[in-house]
Image (cartoon, rainbow, N blue to C red):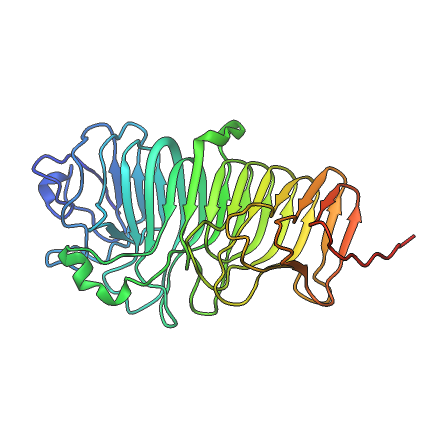
Length: 343
């Protein structure tokens, strides 16, 4: 294992040995970007190119706080599969988790993003019924993050990977925890199809604060504070479901644009904060609270459940129940409620 530092002495070509303190990193190395160069590493980012030294399986990519240059481009993101990525720089980074030998599934165990001036675009190179390029855990402390699908562009990189351009980016668990609870430091946008295609495995989300918008299915969500908006206008998609929602504080805006079956949240535990489904955005889409027997809705003191969207199309699933132990429940005028008292 060697540690090599980006100097950008010649140009922006990652694969050129003269742009590194020793030589271009190979599998098992640690690649470091620090204050010694702000030259953008924006050429030759695909390890499948001739001259590529390995598959991009680095021990670590560390972008230190002193680094102000960019890495990758929209047309040609850095394709890499390190054991760890730490982003503390203030540039714009296009990173695609993948490997030159994408005939196997690969995993990047950890990504940390920690600079409010960083903008990160994150992709998975493979995500289909056969192979997955997976991120096990992503910790977002500060910065702006876009979790996106690969798109077709004009570069030779995209042409070489045309069969993979429908891949959504899969993160098993995302943790959003801005330092000191500074909500304005952490902003995340998750595009649709950000789940594991093989088995339709959704991402789990723990959110301590910040602002996050998602158009993709989610597994277990724990919202401690901040603003989580589920669904955007004009982002029609299927399977806009959440398995379990635990909300302790903050605001949850529920407005999925599901073109398939009615979007649902399987189990809901509202301990505090505001669950708001009253927006006019996508209020023509029917939505369901609960997902059958044993998958219920609980509203506790200090919580607010607002499903008054003026459409009367938000319902409780058959065999699911809504239990109010305090808090406030707001429904449309004319709604029919069946009430049972448990004493």
